[in-house]
Length: 68
Image (cartoon, rainbow, N blue to C red; front, side, top):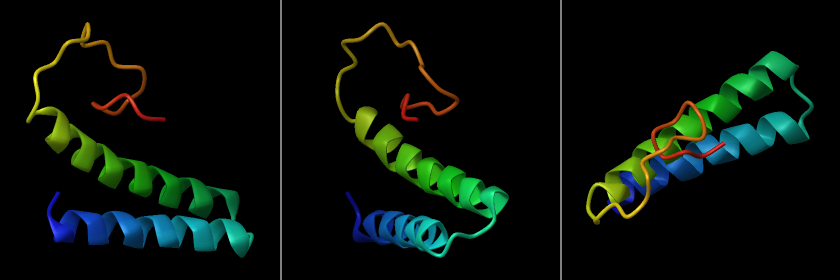
């Protein structure tokens, strides 16, 4: 995983955590959560394309990796 991807993921996770701890507005917390999941999904999706898929390909969420 490239360092840039990891840095981006940690940054959005930090922003999400800060919103929760500081009791920000629910819409802001949800927006930061979705941004965090989108970044993680991009990283996971990139990792999945590098290996052979052995599953049925079903997606459990709106994200291609099936997270959240």
